[in-house]
Amino acid sequence: MGIFELSILLIIVMLVALATGLWIAFSLSAVALVALASKPALPAAQVMATSFWSASISWDLTALPMFIWMGEILFRSRLSENMFTGISPFVRRIPGRLAHVNVLGCTVFAAVSGSSAATTATIGKISLPELQKRGYDDRLAIGSLAGSGTLGLLIPPSIILIVYGAAVEESIARLFVAGVIPGLMLGALFMGYVAVWALLNPDKMPPREARVPWRQKLQAIRELLPVVVLIAGVIGSIYGGLASPTEAAVVGVALSLVLARMQGALDWLRFKEGLLAATVTSCMIAFILAGAAVLTTAMGFTGLPRQLATWIGELGLSPMMLLAALTLLFIILGCFLDGISMIVLTTAVIMPLVVAAGFDLVWFGIYLVVVVEMAQITPPVGFNLFVIQGLTGRDLFAIARAALPFFFLLLLMVVLLALFPDIALWLPRTMFSA
Image 1 (cartoon, helix red, strand yellow):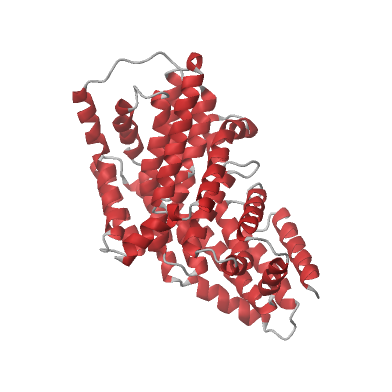
Image 2: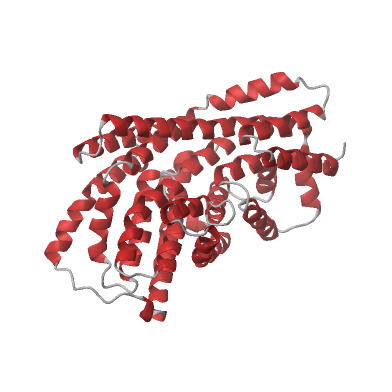
């Protein structure tokens, strides 16, 4: 069977498996089984069992359930309320005023969560009712929340960067550091758009509120102290060389438990709910990764990635043309798959192309996460859209239209990363070469 026939067959098997509602891990394994069947001499059962087990015991994945659990604890605490209270006095005089709380709140919460859905849900539960009550435009409030919530994927600690690092065997610490500057730049782009929109649409903004005295601003800073402590504990321990990402995840869980308890928001029921939710989510992701590992191994045995890389290489695409093609591919995939599934489904096939094109794997990880962020606000399967729909009850496509300007800002970030790779590479190169 030739490369094109096998590729088409595997795509059909995957689409049929997903269309029937089969779990993604089983869908990946089914595709792997078909791929291995194309090489009858291979012991398919042994290959699948070995790959499944090897992927399940990866030490790098230990950080995954810890960061997920930390997000669940914070989701059930009053941390997001404290952030809204602490940030709002400082943005009242900026064009866009309290609409910036969505961006700033998501940026701060992303630094302690690692999950786009958790960031969107936690900030949205606090900000959307407040903004609606104060007369802010619904489309601006919803769109800025949808776009800013994606920062949970990029600003470390990021669950999806852990998944990518484990999949391509790249340093998670380097990936975390590389996500800092692009994440902050995206936050600045989002705030810039909100400010410009507010200046162009003054009739859709509520009346200016009274100036907040400095004494009240200083009191508001106290509300942010728990967030600062948590960020310092998690991110500072990694950047300071005191802990690996896995160890820092444990530090984050311990600190979040202490903070939630100090706030009086942690009882036995919430503890059990957070632990159960984190277990379910972690098992789902680990199961998907194990299925992806089986597919990766099967692809290696069939030689399909190598042949595909050779074929694309013969097309003579420049690195930028390849990047444009991959961006289009991921945008299309984002209409049907969540971010983690996109990464684990495509890693085995695209990595040979990426390496052959000379892209740095750390840089490509950041590029990939930004593209996946775009997928988070792309219907019909945009996780952030689902989260906001659950919060507001609005039509999914109406939410997607509100998020469209932020989709284009993410696309602008992809272009900037392609033109100026040091946006992602300068900080890890500086920190890890010292």
